[in-house]
Image (cartoon, rainbow, N blue to C red; front, side, top):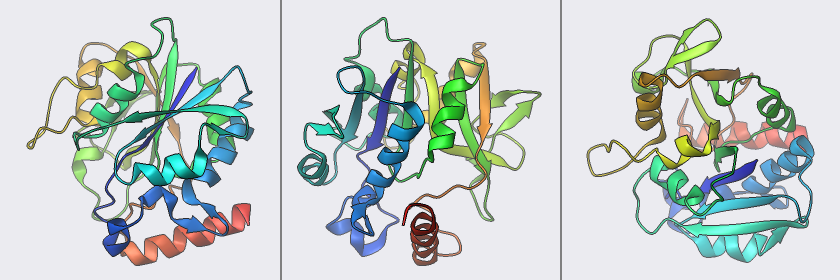
Length: 241
């Protein structure tokens, strides 16, 4: 299993803070936001030195992540891959896995502004379906484009779907799928995960789902970006403080 965290975003919905701070480095207590998830990752996956590694796809203010985390995190090797241009999450994941060995069975990837608890990492690893997408209940005003359609225990649409569930920004994917999320581009040339993942579903890929009881992400805007950040800080402080 390979682990890839997408941490290249510009934080355009993060207000003035995004002008000088990589969003996932927002301090909560004495640790940046991303470190809280990485501690949960270690606990939930049992990652071990000399056996596992973490890939960080970086871009905007990449020096902040490189300077803080360095070459290893708690003894786990950290590999940095630069996304040189803003070309979307699908492109970021693609460049993050391009250099992985062809025999890699699966990739666990997540957005750096999403908090992932240890029990979610464990549930993702134990899921019986090889390809899995984490989902959460959508918020009022959420774009309908990210809504999912389910049939039984499978997801049939992750893009332009129907129903209350939306993609949460955490996936377990076969390597060939993770590498192939650069098929279709949006206006402006961005390759996003969901519309590209939908092309694999249209070709027959079976996609399971994992429901998140709560979605904590710094990019939220409901009821406002400021209130969302306060809520995320409060909940993480309750959990890890």
